[in-house]
Length: 162
Image (tube, rainbow, N blue to C red; front, side, top):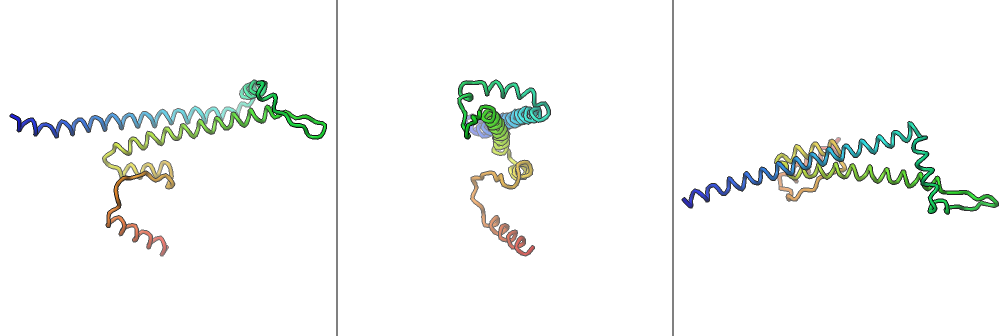
């Protein structure tokens, strides 16, 4: 009877691992989709600034009217110039860039979660390289084997000869 309990333990642990992996993969995909939605929202906002500037001009005028920005002035000769509108535009553009960067980082985090929970990591690695470019190299905890180093040396020799 106890022998049967020991035989069931690995299958139960394996099933639990599979369920946790599935939940983590689904969470990663949801995070990717949420980041994608945020990217679409931000880039739609940026597009609307260029196509309908009067709508955003009201917001920048309200920002420029704040006491913090109205005090930004400089004098050149006898003329005094206000930097309130320029500062409002810089702040708005900087916030839009920061939000876009965060949305892309959210998507990349979701992709890493899916990568970490996937069994076929070479396929995921290829997808990530195609999606985010060759500069984005996933971190692996495995030590390269001797066959990997031989493959790299052959590839490097082929590149040098071309």
